Length: 77
Image 1 (cartoon, one colour):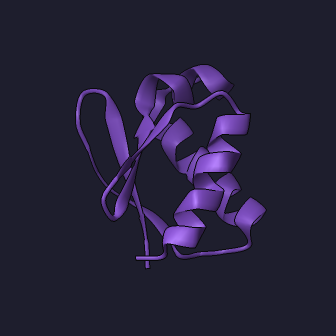
Image 2: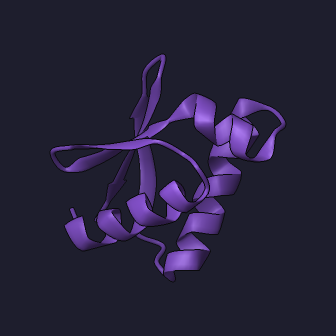
Image 3: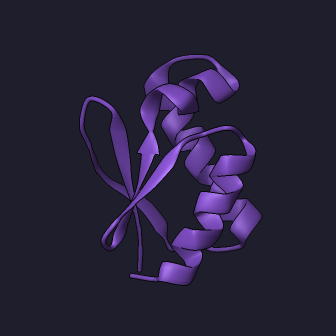
């Protein structure tokens, strides 16, 4: 877990208007906000935004670990 990287991810996502919530060693990312930020199908948006986030933060160490009805769970190593 890399808390500093997750904090940077939280800031970057916030600039796109995507709600996040700290959850222990994870960052919860609002699924609806992600789709609304860019449009298109949900699953493709999740991967697209994760790819852009990795580029913006210059780190391949971010990954989705799960999801529920409202949130995707972002972690780093």
